[in-house]
Image 1 (cartoon, helix red, strand yellow):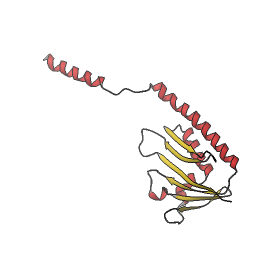
Image 2 (tube, one colour):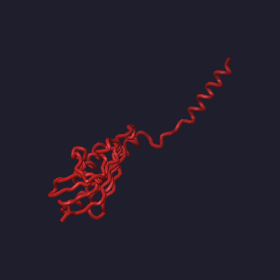
Image 3 (cartoon, rainbow, N blue to C red):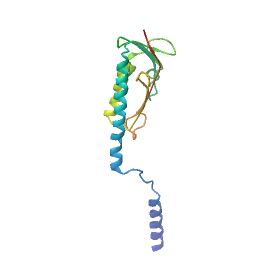
Image 4 (cartoon, helix red, strand yellow):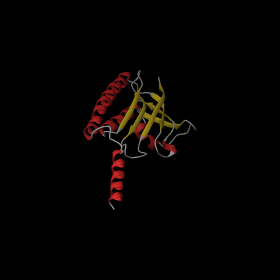
Length: 165
């Protein structure tokens, strides 16, 4: 009668010893985003300053959104800005105008900086940004707001930047 109990207890103990171990303590997990946020914030401020020093108000760029969203909201699209205001958003594939509502948060370089700042303020689980070394504008933005939620990540790409004279 005791043998089945001993065997069961032995199996439970062996399974319990094979559970994965957390690589960081809860305190380290809670503190780590702050370190990344500080670095991300410094990089954002530096590159926003670099962009502002260029004083570019007429430009165009190709924008793609790798989100889990409808195809019309993904692009790629060419966004053209004159005097700091978006004048057109056109599909690369068709050359036709697209619904500007899909690109409301991404329609100028300053708005892209705002997206990054928002991710920092919201303490996104993961934020990876690449910036143009010459102009300071972001060339890639990858944000995972919550590592426990699937399909809420965004992957933005900014390419073919051209100043319009």
